Image (cartoon, rainbow, N blue to C red; front, top):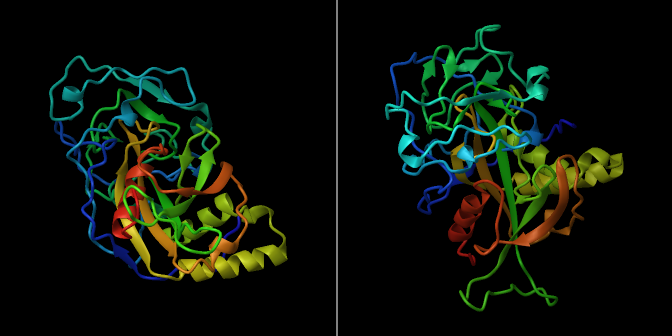
Length: 345
């Protein structure tokens, strides 16, 4: 993966739109007495997807959507395996709810146990500092402190029916970044296309089809240890939507110029926090920062040929529309972009 020297330093403003509750997110951690200690999040490689800034100057307001229960994090069969979760009904999700009969399945994928560079060792063989910046690994959560019980962090949204790390590399939060790149949809004459039902203009965003599940998604990826989220956003978009890794030096220079122009514009931060992801476990979960970069005039990335790379199967400009289905909580991020930009949803 290339590490472009260009870094995005444009200011990011928070969406003024009401932050809609993620129907696929969940509750705030509570529970039995536990050690309050530093966090051990994870930055599993991008193929595991979607972010948390450590030293950026973005908006400081923290988004927390704790009024709803996570759903995808309790999917019956854990992705990429034949492992079944212990069934967790809605009224047993919260850690505060006593449940002596709870017997979660224990599972960590062999690829994680092999200890690649993006994965932690097993708890007991090392001493992570939870809820703090642990060396280069940011083990803090966007949503505040989480509990640590018997040396392991507890999912701050509640039970998932499975302990261990599953496919996730870090104990605790695994941080990702989701760049939402948009433009106005135009007809052959260059005029904005308006939806006849809503009377609002149509937005399009760069969407990739994930190879692991075949769903359309925002081209996001994991934040490397010590990496600024602003760089992650730019790097992931370049690699997944423009296939910059396979570009020639001349092509890469053009990509860099266009990408720099877009990512130097003010970004709109639409979400920061927990993601209801099917890979989540009781001890490891996904968090992300989703930022919208809008090509208002259509003269930056809109003119570049999209080419799937890295973890993407396909890539295209896709209309923002509530009738379409997107990966994980991405539809909620896109809805907020549409509302903020007064576009059709």
